Image 1: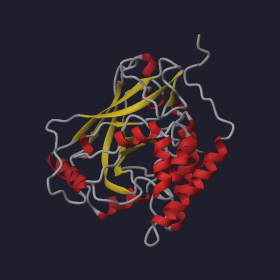
Image 2 (image 1 turned 45 degrees about the horizontal axis):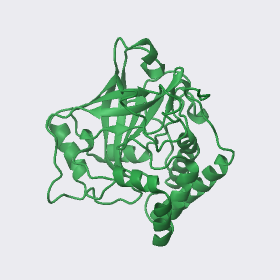
Image 3 (image 1 turned 30 degrees about the horizontal axis):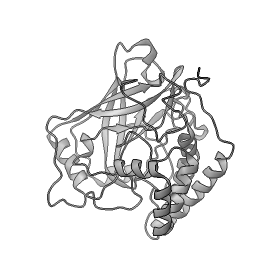
Length: 334
């Protein structure tokens, strides 16, 4: 009989040491990666587009799904930022993980982050793979240490961490259009008396194909074309943790089985037909911060990777905003 409980965290005694080391490592990395010009993010620095959207909560949700943001039918205005994960700004044909960061506006109630407690925004962070690369912060710190070292350190790490290598290989792929990718939170979040993972599932009428002679920024061009012709739609869904043993809170490198617990739609995302390829939206997308901890307590992030994010996301954001002489502030409308 299992003694594990749903949404239960088990915090390693040495976790804070790894978080501190990883934070210093990533700060040093962005300083090295950005010797001139503005200080960019350590991950997801290349933005395909910041777009205006609506986040429409489903009516008549089952009682167990009426939690926090989803407790009543409502439409939130939102900004959504699409990006490449790599810290290097490379051509889009390079295999990579892609990101979808959602910022809702008009969300009342105190948020978790103390310095943004009264802000009426709420963030969801998703990427184009259903598992995180590593299981915990210790493994993640060792991965970054190897990646930022020499080729021999990288090879040694991958040969001794087969699952990390496998997760990484399966997650860095090529895509044709950021508006036609399925995205996942990979990490769990509190949701009532259990936990969930999130997913954004695109509506695709005619799938795009990768251009044969692709431009370096063909993903942005694909978004421009689609949103010139019409809008883009996603279903936003949650996967409830139903088994505390097989659906791990602390191991974000392990998939939660969709056959054991299917994703259930809780909202629609409508990205308007629009022109977003302008200097003001590029600047806003560069300066906005997204943090999974900028959320209502009902959606508190869970697990070691999320505990790490709380420290690192804020440290990197504060550093780059201060370096760039740009105030860190939340939008009030789109």
